[in-house]
Amino acid sequence: MASAYILINTDVGAEQEVLDQLKSMPEVTEAAAVYGIYDIVCRIESDTMEKLKETMIANLRSVARIRSTMTMICVSDEDE
Picture 1: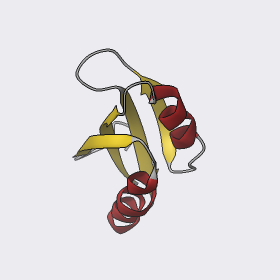
Picture 2: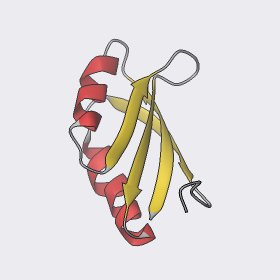
Picture 3: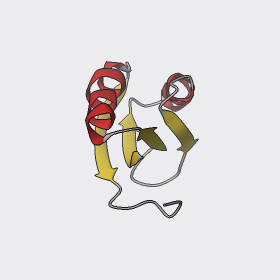
Picture 4: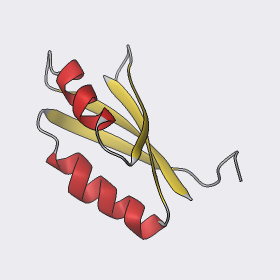
């Protein structure tokens, strides 16, 4: 299983709208609004690294009102 954490900055006031869109995606296993430099933290999972990359490019980049992201691909999962 391939997974990544994504730190997201949204347009001002768009946090809940973006969070709702993320939570509707099957690849997003966790998503939360946070205080600090970033507005949202989410975790995505896929069967393969290739599918994970496709999810990041196709799905996350299509979400309106996301201004920037920082992706951290997990080296290993504690569940493994």
